[in-house]
Length: 205
Image (cartoon, rainbow, N blue to C red; front, side, top):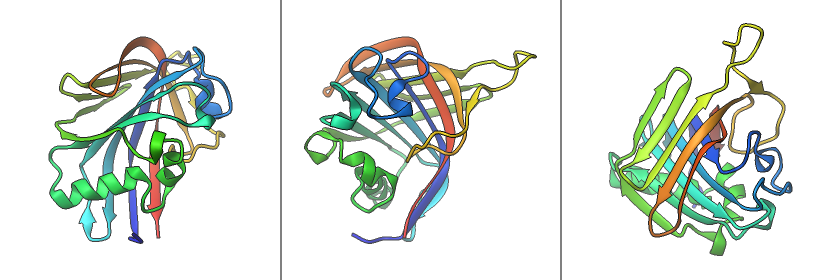
């Protein structure tokens, strides 16, 4: 495949590490507990895959990494918005699989067997409300993150601005997350752990 595509929108995450997740700083750092359970929530503000419009769609990825993330062997599951047409579904599947370039080509090298354990088309309910971001896939997946309050007024966002990260934007807004996954690929639940969000911009041409 060699299709020109681009996408912009909201990306937020939560995992079982303490804030700030060492893996977010570098995949060569060991996770807080020796393994990492993560959810990424993705909201597409705009974008296209060839002639396929991606605007307004959502996606989520859950993963379990058994050790240091750079060593790979991640078990990953992809959830795709059930509002997607067959063409939109396939476009999102290809983008997140890394089959057609972009930042997820880099990420996909860490997936166990080089592919997702499962890809599921289902309702994804996303909320972006002030300091709170959440995504829910019925009873299978849930991620909510609330941003920290910083600065002298205790009202400012707490940000990191100079980390290299292939999927996130330049400014990372820190928060605390609640995460839960319960499906055939993995089962776990955490509260008050690492969370953050950014504005992403991905492309392949």
